[in-house]
Image (cartoon, rainbow, N blue to C red; front, side, top):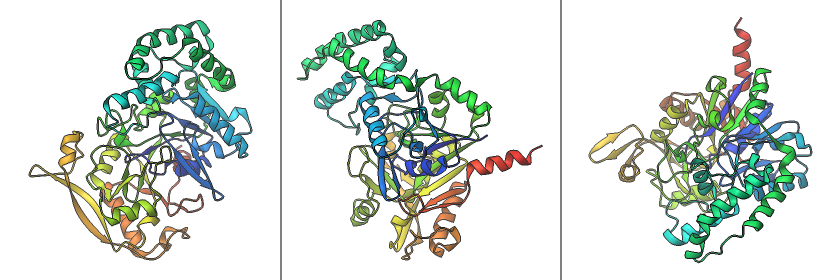
Length: 438
C-alpha cells in the first residue's frame, strides 16, 4: 500500500495534471482534496488536450476510481458539463469510476454573483477567478454552507437558501445586480442533485477501507503551496489549504496513512493574478518563457507572469509539505537560453534572506540573489533517459537537487504523456521498501 500526495510547489499551474495522469497508472484511486473549478489541470494524451476543473486527472485511465473529497467546493453545473464532455470523448463510461463526498460543499448560484458584485464594488485586486469559490468557503467556515448531503433533504435545503438570500439579495440590489428567487435556485439545485446522486458517498469511510485493503491511493492537490490560505502569500491566495496536510482534512484520512509527498515545480516560475513575485521577468526573456511554455491560464486564459526558478520559495514548499521528492516540469522550455539563473536568496531592507517571508509587503521589497548556470541548445523533448540529456541540462537538475536537498523523481520534457523521464516511482519504491521489511 502506498498513499501519495501530489502538491504544487509554486503558485499553481505547475503541470500537476500530467504528473497525476502518469502516476495514476500505478494507483488504484485518485482523490481531489481541495479547491474548486478555479483550478484547471491540462493533460495531453495521444495529441488530444483535455482540461479538467473538478474531476481528478486520473479519469482518463479506465478502471481507476476518482474521488472528489469533502475539502472541495463543488459547482454542479461545471461537474455535469465535465462528465458529459468526458463521456463524449470516450472516457468515464462506468459510473462507478466517480465518487463524490456527501460532505463536500456546493457552490451556489448566489456565490458566483457575490464574487462578481464584489468585483464591481471594490475591484479584483487579488486575482480571483470570480467562480464563487471564496464565498462558498466563507459560508462553510461560517457554518451556513450547503453540503452535498443537504441536497437530499429538501426542507433543510430550502431553509438554507431562504436564510442566505434574505441577507444577500439587498446587497445584490444595492450594487446593481438582480436579486435571486428562492424557488428558482431551489429548483435548479434539486434538478442537479438527482443527476449526481449515484456518485454520492461517505468518502472518508470508503478511502480508509480501501487503504486497509492495501490499495494504492493518489491525492491530487489544486493550485499550489504559495496560494495556501495559511502558508501562502496572503492575501494573494486561494481560500483553501493547498499544502499536503490538506489531503488529510480534505479526504478524511489520518496523517499516518500518507507514505510520500511529491511536489511539482516548473523549471522556472509562473504566477497568475496579483501579488509579489520576486523573480518575475518583465523583459523579452519573460515573454519568451510565456510563449514557449504556453503560459496562459487553463481556467481563465489569462497570461501568466513568468520568471526564473525561486529556490527560496521552493525550500518553503519542501518544509511545509514535507516533500519526499520533486517532479520537474517544462524543462524543455529553457532550451536555447544561454544563461539560466536560479534565485538562491533575497535582499531586502539591507539584509539577505534565505527563508521565504510570508509578509507580502516584505516580499514585495525583496530583490532576488542569483547564481547562473550555462544553458543548452540541444532539443530534449524526444529524450527518455536522464543520462541522455545534454550535460548542462543534467547539471541544472542536479543543482536543483543539491540546493533543495530532495530527489527530483520525475522530469517532464514536453506536454505529452510519453515525454517524461520517471527517475523514481513512489508507488514502486514504497512497495520495495515494504517488501524488504520482515
